[in-house]
Structures are given as C-alpha cells and as structure tokens.
Length: 90
Image (cartoon, rainbow, N blue to C red; front, side):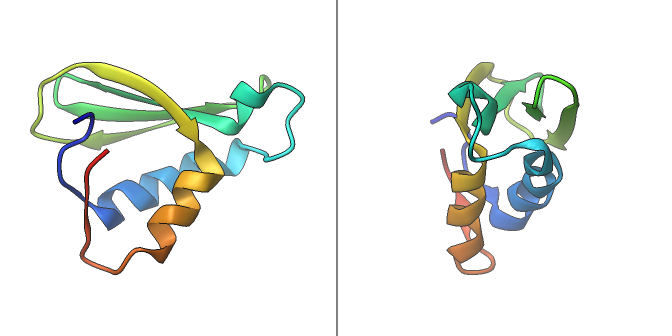
C-alpha cells in the first residue's frame, strides 16, 4: 500500500489546495497530475502548471518512502463522493 488508512478529510483538504493549479485540458498530460510523495512521516502533494507550483504537506505516522502521480481532478472527484469518516488506502 502506498498510503495506508488515512481519513478522507485529512487527504481531501490539502488536495483541494493543490488541485487549484491543475487544469483538465493541458497540452502536456502530466500537468493534470499531482505528485504524491511519502517520506519521513510526511505526505507531500505537489501540482504545477509550469508557472506556479503548489505543495502541501500532511503529517503521518508511516515512515516508508514512495512516490506516484495521479490525476488531480479525478482523485478529488472520487474523494468527494465517498462518505464522511471514510478511511482511504491508496
């Protein structure tokens, strides 16, 4: 598991901050993604449009290291429709 059991709201709120810079219709598809990095007990969410970069950090108790990119708007849409108090694993 990349992210093990995190509260929906703990992931959704920081995601909403960085997803503001992401646009669905990009000339470079990678720019519609968000970089999620996990290391040293922190999850870092990063998005860019090549002019602006936004990073948000979530504290966690998992010390494993990994990185992945996911569609920012798609992940936000999925998290929004989940019930409140849900636990998320990626």
